[in-house]
Length: 569
Ligand SMILES: [Zn+2]
Image (cartoon, rainbow, N blue to C red; front, side):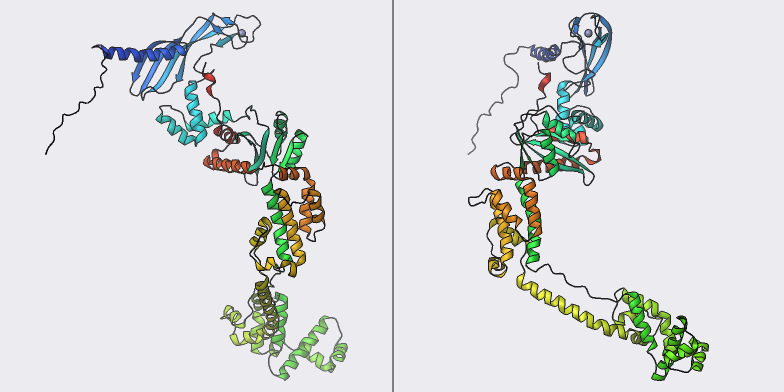
């Protein structure tokens, strides 16, 4: 049952061809790798020290002479020696540093501006603290993520660099737009750096899909200069803004401009759909319910107060107020008596009467709150119960009821009218309701399921005409078979009864060339919309350190197969 098989022998990891001194040979090979690398850098290795996880190579530059970076002449005169610390890529998990004894030379050319220069090194730039390889890793990490994350990732590769230093590298890279070659077909669009405050502009190549340039402003001179420095550009796509049109024209009259189809259709949507709905009678507003103003309410309330009590009392109060009014107008006693049809003695007597004795307690109570009540009513409180509730404790609700009566009666009628009007609107709306979306769908596809829209030519021939003008524009823009020419369409649109459509026609005729090009070519600004979207994502990942230079670096160099290998000989 049990099958015993010979255990397979594990292949030995020891090399067969090595003799007893194999380890020495391996160490020798490692050493030669290090020395070989140093030779590439023109560095002679002196020593190598290991301290925990860091490895330090000590070396000196080879060769007797060095070339002056200013005049290009070789010299052998040494001015002084100095030590430079250069960070290298890791060596088997060790943070590796090269401490290099380099020379400062004296230039022997008499007229050279540089008297003394540091000798150029093969592994790093002047003042460089990292080798080219390390620099490239820093760039690659910093471009693809936030600086803090990049700093962390690099520390895993045993490259020690702070987040601020990563940002500094990016800022340096993004200071200016790089020198690039374009395919001749580019697009431009703007995006917000801070919405409503600061806008930037990006230029993208339609063929390579790379971001070629990012500008700090939307319509600046630097964009014109950039376009001028690229005479190979034949076609520029843009949105419908006149500012871009004028910038491109200013740069070169030979550049063909293409307006974006999507933006054109969006403008048409904005201009056409709502006016069509208005024409279909759907946009009539509901009336708000009326409320009296404070003064008007006060007048009603005062009338009510003066109307309290029996007939005798009312006539007394009325006489009193009439006499007082006429006296305030400056009439004499005799004149007052004549006007009111009473005896002058009575007028005299009335003027001597104390108001508080004349009025009933109810009236006095009501007078105290009359102003407040008027304010409550004008604030939108028309029913007597609601007003009484608000005045609770100040006055009896019976009195409130009495005071509110004239207002309630008058406004009951007015409010009923509004209610009926609004109800009629609602019912009417139900029969002709067409959604804005279905109108737009009808324009875009030329087909609709809405019965109302299908019957338009019977019920609303003028609306049908407006929709047909929109459909014709769509056909023209998409270069369909039965599309009208631009001239024909413009003629139709000028005659349109809707003023928004006429405005749109004017906009199209102002930008006519670009729109005609949009009808004929396949280029559009969709690529730019994607770029802008990406810019926003980058911007938001940079927290508050989003400097325009950093953004430019990430946009331009982040997406490019950029040739950084200039350090390879
Ligand atoms: Zn020189």
